[in-house]
Image (cartoon, rainbow, N blue to C red):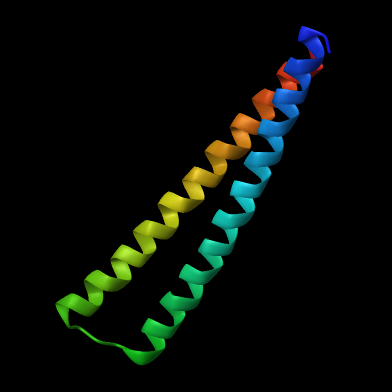
Length: 85
């Protein structure tokens, strides 16, 4: 196998792994949404500090995971560009 073929295969494998990670992280976002919904339903209108902090942390975690997904998508785009060269 030529060096170029090996490089193309490595890039393709990296893209596949990125897709797998995006899928797992997307499933995690869905789970975070479910947990947030359950917490909100269980504590409607609660003003307790620890409950408010819990919801804020869930929201912050979701935002970080979404940013990770966006970064992985950008990396995959760069790999696709490299593969085309």
